[in-house]
Image 1 (cartoon, rainbow, N blue to C red):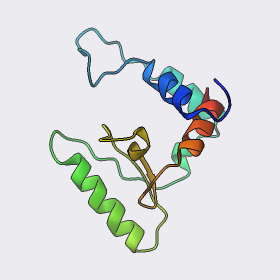
Image 2: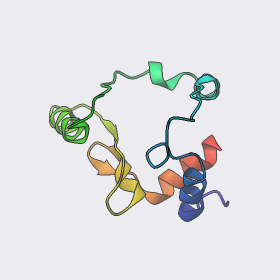
Image 3: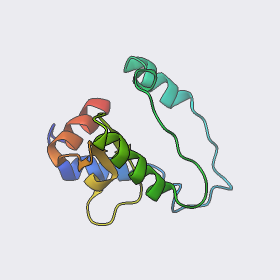
Image 4: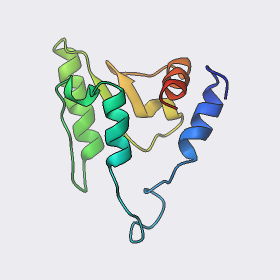
Length: 112
């Protein structure tokens, strides 16, 4: 994968287990690897205030409304939703705008 190859970045992301499309009954959830990655990245999850939305209905709508309210109030926002409709970049938004393909590829390359 070259450093800024968007399609290779998407292929890499999609090569991992997809728990949205597979049975969870046999899945073993272990957060130690993500914990180690967050440590190596300097614990970014602790650096920003966040809203975590859980439940079975309305998460996307609720997240979009909160994102819109905060952006309109002058806050810098980041939003991750899944699935996407047309492009994977729709899943990651900063201040209401989808991430650029080149930025997504660069981030995937860095994290890989």
